[in-house]
Image 1: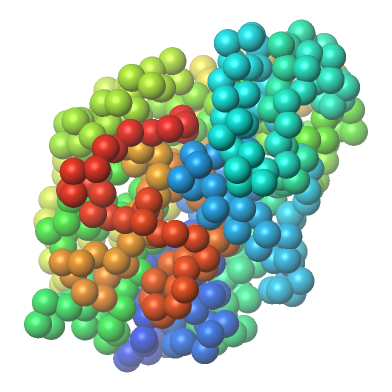
Image 2 (image 1 turned 135 degrees about the vertical axis):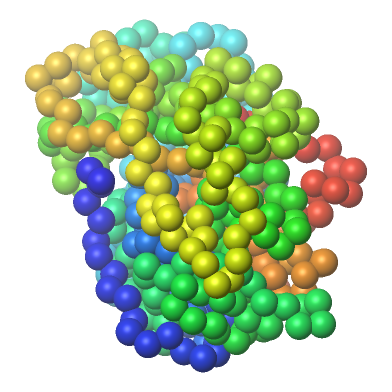
Length: 441
């Protein structure tokens, strides 16, 4: 894997019991573990591979409130506040910096959409403002393109995905959390219809609460419990450049190009489009995802290939006594789309000519867990008392990870929530709610 990830060694001996077991060691799982451990609650986190090795270390690293679905805005704002204090709170480096973020608008139609969002978002006290054409290039060092304008949010920032999840996991351990890697959870045990434990590949652990923070694996795990979670995964492709001091400081996203400056002086760059493999779940959840597909048609490529057959096989039922799909695939390390990377590189050099002499040092792919309305599921499951879902972050999980972890922990403890959890309820998929996105991926 071309992403350099800080290591988190595993604890040695699996305990016989814990109050809470968290399934998944991405940014959501480790933030939840930290919040629970900080409250003195015995918590055990089980990760089938390495901490943060999938999308949590492969994302763009944005921590933004800009452009959020307004149903998600309070959680995004709470997360940004937590990011600002994170390094001091955990005593470690996550790479968070306030850089500002921009959505660049190539035409008046796109600018009008951003202005319409800002008119509604002002009720939340956002720092966002509209930049007019000349102001865009004044803000983005090195840009030579002509734009209609941009939506600029100076209070937003970025952090380093390769640092953040491991640093927070180690901080959770210092607070008393138990962290186990290469330890897949095979099943959840129920007694009298409620959670009573988990079966891992290394043994059984008694518990009263399970938090499923499995990212792209969550829907498959839910199926083993008889739960239907409409969630699909899409491939995003990213490259990393060599360091340069001639590029822009704010993180920016425009037509066919996203970039943000890294702590090492290089840039994380993407085209911004995604690829969706056609798999059995594509048909299972087709009705729910159709509105999103129509909305994002220009930014989603459909691909038919071997994944259909791979998922048909590992999606079959498994037993607690034998290897699960989570042990067969320790870490999703998909090949990036060379087509998308080439387009990103071309747009980068066209927009910022200085990058013509700045080499690409690495590239990678990452799988994003997406829901039909691009909102996460952060919710108790009423039909399985003791089970809490925290998944489906649709490419937003890194940025809202601290707030999501806090909210998930509050669902465990019953404390007043950091943000209203109602928009993220699991029951929205079955209670007749309109499942439609307000913003895209």
